Image (cartoon, rainbow, N blue to C red; front, side, top):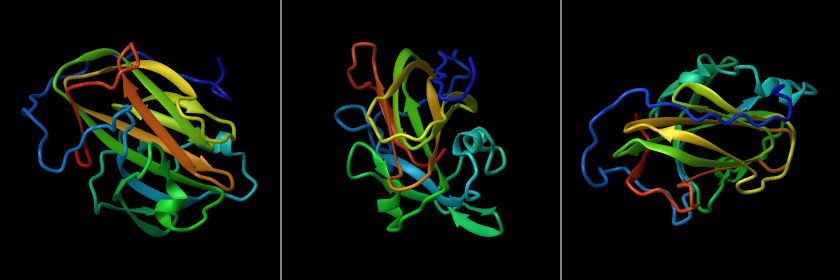
Length: 206
């Protein structure tokens, strides 16, 4: 299977175990009532070359070691000679509207969303549902598991697959390219029956 216009979601094994405090720690939240994650760290916008193929660019790295990102709010990074800062954001709806958050229109640009999902247990067969406008890519615990390389409008839960949440902190890196107009992304976690997962917390720091 080629990566062009393809979905790649893999069920991943338990990688390591960490202790988890009881309850919801200060600064943590939970997914919304439908399981959508609204709390993220955002790094954007990063301009892309005019006229370049966005699907091809999606599969290239725009910042070093993007699969291994573990930022916290206020961290700075140099990209294309500019200093960008990771900013904590909370979406007002079940998808993230990057242009609205940035209060500017950003065409031919890439942005990164990172969130930390802490689980009190290993949860196999977690359903990961993804939508993006336009191209989207996801790294899960450092592994490249998903790429959609075509321009498209946002459709919630457009693509679905299974992952295994490990006990402890799980890292999602959601890379989204905007060709033009709207720039959006949505990510939802449910159990096999479609119900929001219980026993998980969302953090904005590793």
